[in-house]
Length: 477
Image (cartoon, rainbow, N blue to C red; front, side):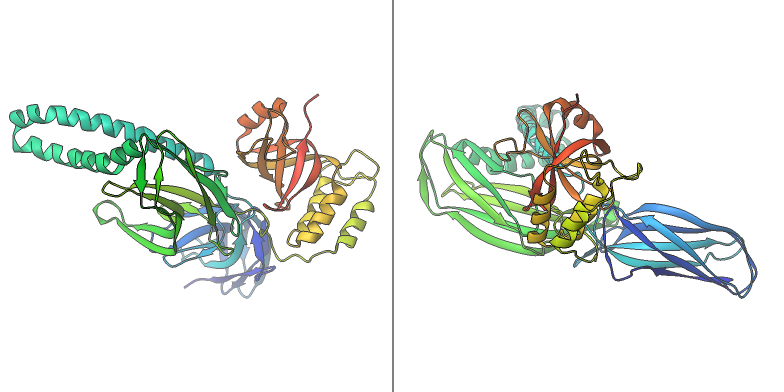
C-alpha cells in the first residue's frame, strides 16, 4: 500500500499551450505514514496511443523534493516545465498524440506513487522534415536506376545460373524478375512514351487552409493521345504494431478526393505541355506526423491515362505543417490602440537579460515587442496594423532556426540579392519569424542547423499568409 498519494494541479488546465512554451502548476502530496522520499520527480512528455507501437519523448524533468515526509502532512511543490516543440496534440482514428505532466515519488521498499495530468498543445512551428523528404525522393530516383541495372543483369545471368543450380536458382531469381517486370510495365514503358515528365510544387510544404500550387510538365517523344489526366488527393493514418513476423500495418483514410486536371487530348511530340496543379488543404487539416511507427501522411497521386498502354502514375508527398497563425494559448487580446500605446510608452532602460534593445529613442526590447505581436496574432487586422507601426525598428535578437525556404528574391521583395529566407521562431513567446539572410551570413546559417541564432535585424512587415513577423538581418560589418 502506498504511503502517500500524488495529484497534479495545472495552473490553467483548459489552456491550449504553444509548443516550445512552458507548463506550470503544483504537485500535491498527501502523506498517510512517515516515509522517506528519495526523489519527487516531475516531467513533461508526449506519447502516442492507438493501434501503433508506442512512441514517446520527454521535454523536461525536475526533481522537486528529497527528504522525509510525516504522516498527516499535505505538501505542495511548484513546477514549471518546458513543452516539446513537436508534435502537437492529435486525436485520430487509429492514432492519438497526448502531452502529459507525470509525477513520481521514489519510495524505498514500496510501490512508487504516481500521478499524470494531460494538457493540450498546439503547434508553434513544425519539425525539420522538408530536407529529409527531398533526400528520400532523390534516393528513390537512384534506386530506380539500380533496379534497371539489376533487371538486365538478372536476365543475362538467368540461363547460366539455371543450368548450374537448377530449381533453387530459379527460386532465387523469381522475385527480382517479377520486380523487374513490374518496373518495366509501370515505370519504363510510360516514361518511354511520355518522355520527360516533371511535377513541380512551388513550396515543399503547405499549411491548413492554404493551397499547394504547382504544375505537371510533359514533353513527349512522339505524338501521344491520352484519355485524361487526373489527380487523387488523399490523407491517411498509418500505424504499425508488433515486430518481425508479427508486424501489422493499420491504415485509415480520412481525406479522399479525385479531380480531373485535363480531358482527352493529344500531346505534341517535342513540345512542353504544362498543366497547373492546385491542391486545397482543409482548414481543419491534421498536420503531417512521422513518429516512429505512427504517421499521418498527405499525398497527391497524378495519373496520365494512356489508351492501350500502361498509365503513368506518380505519388507526390505533401507536408502539411503549421504556418504559425493558429499557434498559441488562450491569452487575452489587446486592441491596436493599447498595443501601440505600450510600444510608444516603453521604458527608456531595459534589462540586459532581455533580448537586446532598439537603437533609438524608446529602447523597447524585442522581447516586449514579440509579446505585443503575440497577443494580437489571431486578429489579422490588428496584427497587420501593429506590424506596420513597428516596421523600421531595429533590434538585437535571438531565434531558434526551423528551416530554409525555397523561394528567391523574385517571390519576396525583402529577400537580399544572392540571399535567402529562413523560418524561425522567438523563444518566449514562440513567435514565428521570417528572417531575410544576406549573402554574407549564408555560411553562418548553413552551419547553425536548428540551433539558436543571435544577431541584429530590422522589422520589415508581417507575412499574413504564414502568420510570421518579417525581419531583415543586418550584414556583419
